[in-house]
Length: 340
Image (cartoon, rainbow, N blue to C red):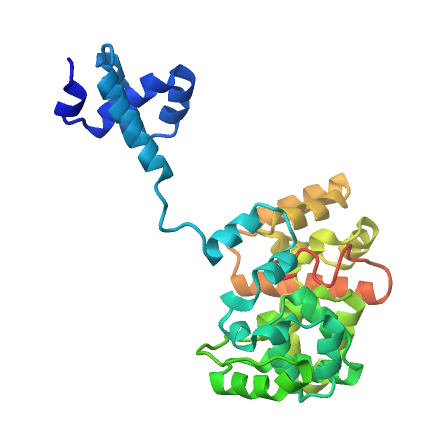
């Protein structure tokens, strides 16, 4: 078969079979394990039919394999690749956001270096700015950092800033250009505006609140409610969620369960996350847990609005007990909330 390796065209499965034989059983088995089932059948069938591999053919297959292995890939590098690398590090989201910089966010990209100032410096400058300017800048920051910057702003300005964030629906590029122009001299940076817009600030405002101490977050929401009850309620629903009941201390949960009727509890727990249901049943006596399960079985089809009302009632009881010092949430403002 001298010269056969150059004269005979080889199918992909034939080349894969030869490669597996040349690399040995252990390495060949690892390669085959990652192939689709149909390809495994084709390759193993070719391996079974192989006789001795001529040196020229072996060299040809190995050279093709090597050249393909070292060929540069078009998708190598770039921001998304950097993000995937950072996702493997286990670093906190805030740290990863800082390392990646603002380039992935259209609005943040427009403001550029303004967002890389020290927290205290940025907070000091924003303290004397218009509330809309503060809101715009804070929307561009990771929630935990936005919370730190907001904390350095005088308290009377915090509520107004939060209100502006909650009401912000879209930011036009000319608005961003005005903000950059206003702040560049004071912060020592300039930004060239680019196209881009920002969706609603409600979620980001909620994320900021969720990063604060619970008492501080609730105090700000109460003050906000005096100015805009609707925005305050939307933020409260995002920050203090039914899911956060999974993080109530056991003694507080027992107090809560004594304050709620079994029917209301059954409605609220229908299809509830495992963490919440587990916390509830853990703090019930065996008899009470059995009665609750029976009540849930008898419910039948549950209307979504009825369940939502029951969950609001349960959470409302929990927040009142927290005010009275009889219940505690173990964690920050919105422990268990994905936006936290």
